[in-house]
Length: 103
Image 1 (cartoon, rainbow, N blue to C red):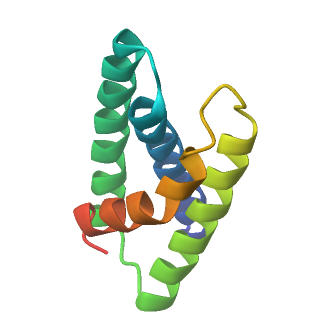
Image 2 (cartoon, rainbow, N blue to C red):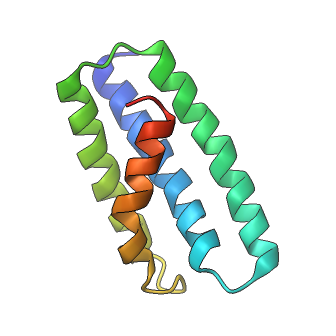
């Protein structure tokens, strides 16, 4: 798999993971919150594996961060049932995930 496709795959996984985590944090239903956090954890592990097995330089990492943020915002916009507090959480959650995957 080429670097461009790895970046695309990683950003999609990160955006999906964060969508689930933010949904769990601002959601009102406790049953769904547990499910969303479980999905977040699974996707985060996939992202960690890709990041560990890839050789991303600092430019790649910045590209990954900006693309992941764009994809996350787009995914959150498509889900009006998630409270608007979701936008307030985006930047902090992105930073936390990037620290967790070692960026």
